[in-house]
Image (cartoon, one colour):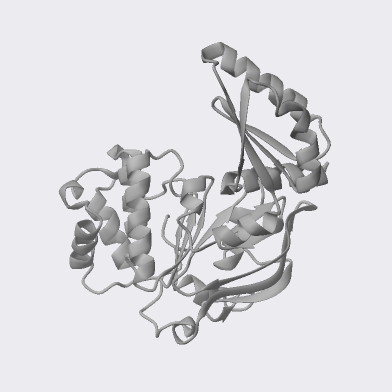
Length: 334
């Protein structure tokens, strides 16, 4: 199910994290499958009430890390706590306070929206399950869809239902594994408004995503690739730590195919130059970045007098940083 863990229990006292500031504090987590290291020596700390973004390419270890944090997988090595409980010895206790929304919608397709929520409420021992389900329908804007079968909902409405099922039992930590994949921009914006409202109420949220605009909505972010945590902090800190210098190049007096050919040609030439660590096209523009500002300046100098282009020195974007991190981690793996 999309709800935390299918490990229901009678109502319990507040988790130890209610008394402290740290929701997740782990050090040296590692996990392998079939001899392949999926998560390698990962350490991270998430504070209560934070929205913490978890980014990285497919297969980078994000989902495995999330499952270790909520007690669904046991690390091969490493230590830490989640909501004040030891992740190695108190996994069952952790699961009682965690809502886990998986990538794939996994509530009952042949039950109505209301029936799904009432089932979750009963499964987790929520008092007055009918009233609790009704309150959740109203809070998430699903009131008019209570009798609709879950399998007939659009992607955005399924997402809302899955979120409602996750938070109905009153978790202290919400784990969202790429929750907005395949959802339209309007539904994504509404979803994030709900997430910020939940965080403002004290809920801690860890969310994995591929969308840069979603990463920028998080209080802090972390980037993981091939099992290694490569960067973490606020968006501003991660950008500053990258050490990137960035130039944007636009075409002048060219349109359509001519502009595209000019950009593609410049991209091919610059990619081969020492000092250029990343070239990324954005329509008829190029973002050119390097970690050595002087070497980058020298690399682009011969092309700055070309009348077809206009050059602007700009601060690197979060996307520039992640493209660079992905390229470096891929090279290291090779």
